[in-house]
Length: 151
Length: 151
DNA sequence: TCCATAATGATATTAACTTTCATTCTCGAT
DNA sequence: ATCGAGAATGAAAGTTAATATCATTATGGA
Image 1 (cartoon, rainbow over the protein chains, first blue to last red):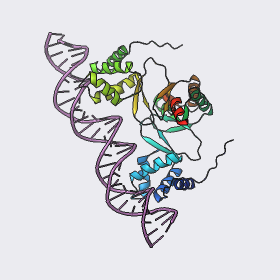
Image 2 (cartoon, rainbow over the protein chains, first blue to last red):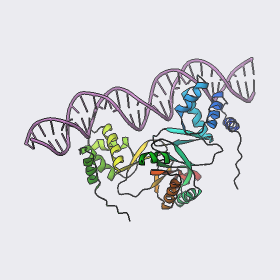
Image 3 (cartoon, rainbow over the protein chains, first blue to last red):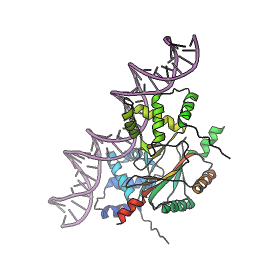
Image 4 (cartoon, chains in turn orange, yellow, cyan, brown):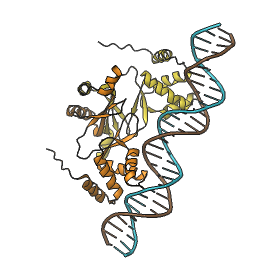
């Protein structure tokens, strides 16, 4: 049985930072706090602009580097939809999921399927492929946009 | 029962071109011929460089526009792996498949699973989501690279 | 408090993608 | 066969996101 102990994301951040010999900064904590609160799938630019209002002087480069660090730590997940732009969502403490993305309005519905994951694992095993991560995305029309079009 | 009639890709190209009021050019035919022969997942740049040798004077913009057109027609599929660069593979007449991508050597193994597709369809239906296309990718280590690392 | 070193932010650079525009080519009408 | 409207082309410029550089600032252990 697997047990996950969920701690405050900021504590995990500090712990990860210390164990890597890095330093704890207001910018890093601010970005984590923001992402933990803001649900959704945000681009670097969106994160930058939103935070810049509260913390003038914040630089794009810091957002870029922090978001990369958080991905390594496992606090955020990078997702890339049809437009090819990298987006980030807060992942810590949330179960894995994949997305259905509406090509009209851009909304990203989440789904998860243990049955699919099992089949996936079996397929990988048959090829001796060691899966590190995966992404499974469906692109199409959400209920709302499909309704509009068919009228 | 669904029947697919597979014709020469060049004929499909000409037919699609005509039905759209576009014009048939040597460049377009050359790109289709090249892609139909070259198996694999090629970037625009790779397509451009390979073809440029045979056909000096060919421009990047033409490759860009043609590849976009071919995607609309359904002759090629765009796939985007971990590096975020768009790649194209010849799709016409080939069954749908997804990929396992080795993060070390970059090889892309193909897989397909009707069982997964069925589950996927069911999940989408439950949300009234109309799937246009999907991608399902596993990133990790292929058998060869996993073997090297564990030694 | 000191100070080695990590982090920051402005800016420059890179890389892929996309648009612009003057010229060339295609193809149906003649 | 040739004409001509409009599509296609290719060089170059523009755009956008991602990444690197570097002088300056901030962190945290000694």
